[in-house]
Length: 209
Ligand code: ADP
Ligand code: TYD
Image 1 (cartoon, rainbow, N blue to C red):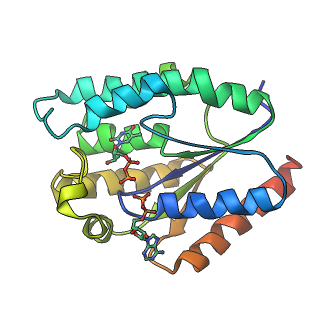
Image 2 (cartoon, rainbow, N blue to C red):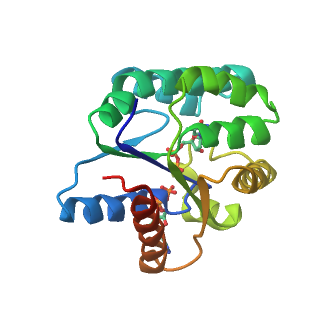
């Protein structure tokens, strides 16, 4: 039974996720609240090794299903080794991407469909975020923020792939109450004020932390 709080941040590449996570870290630390910041793919030594394989620009021949299974494998280790223990210890966990990234990128982007959700339900074994912030930004704007040379194997995909990913995210926002859409085409301060107001409201409603 978890008693911490699990927050994930989702959205297109370059939509400002890491920037907002840093703001949230400062916000919680100012209040003396212990937060664990982590990211996917990655977050444990084994998961970081899997990350290197997935994002390596030389692995262009990787099969789409191999890719989906590697993300899920990386996530299974991350949940077991880091996220579940931290939540059990009552911590706030903030994760840069989680299950919804796989559903959006592999399910919608690679068009593997609903099997991606099923695989990932095995991987996370019931560990689903309490709230998920979806950074809503035209994928073209996010892509333009990252220089060509910095782009990993997934980021190098064509714009129509990134549009399918974004449309997937929008469908998921409509389907799941825990996903909160955030207009990410604003200033850093406006976005963080919006996110923090949602967190304060939800913590207030649930009496958590
Ligand atoms: P992500 O983690 O989603 O890839 P980042 O937080 O790394 O995105 O942001 C990508 C780039 O955009 C960085 O150079 C960052 O400084 C810049 N950036 C982040 N948020 C904003 C914003 N609200 N307005 C303008 N630029 C931003
Ligand atoms: P990340 O390093 O978070 O990129 P960014 O900071 O630019 O958003 O993620 C690397 C890439 O992996 C990104 O293009 C999204 C992709 N990804 C998936 O395709 N499926 C997944 O399950 C996850 C976690 C990430």
